[in-house]
Image 1 (spheres, helix red, strand yellow):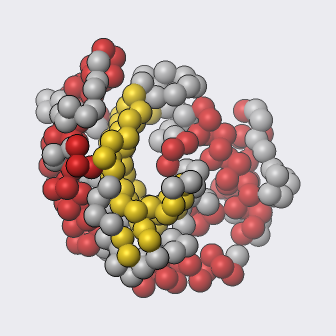
Image 2: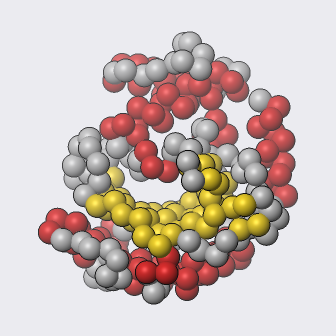
Image 3: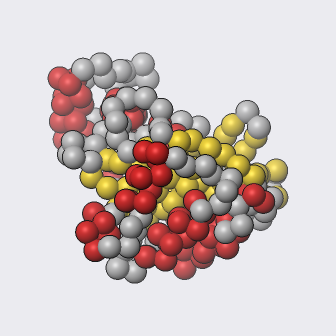
Length: 255
């Protein structure tokens, strides 16, 4: 299989061949990285599994946790508090999906899945750092997931970072290809609950660490561009760099 940087997966047969090649792990790291990124691009375009394009392109997730709602139920309440802001107008199908997904009843809570993705991101406006609270469930089409993402970001300027600047919401139950039901970015000052929620998410990063059983650190992340150490971690970061991240950067540089 060609592992060149232009490698592209165009159909189900090529997708299955890529999956087999990745599972064998017999190729050099550079080849595995090319195959893996093509594999992930195919999944994101079709919203297979947890894949969505907005936390892949221009983004480097440097620490990730899979949530355990026997312990992390307060984060569901935090999501509801943020979404209750008048800054986020939800109507019809979007409102119904949010209410159903975040319902406190045992049936909804049993289906609920979630992650925290701590990230560095590039945009035309500059460098940002932040965290995504990503909630979802298995869709009735089993290979897909319904997702609700809340993204909290500050701006990075050299070694300094700003306070929380913005909150972005993506409401995206799986409906095939196409944009989410709702996508909105608002200044953090318009969301009363946002600063307190951001502080709690920063505490998760600080307190859980690399030894927490919630850590998501699958071997595939070593070969995916959007799971990577930060390129320019700020000294005054809301998420101070760990020795692991520094070592990870050196390993990536060698491959």
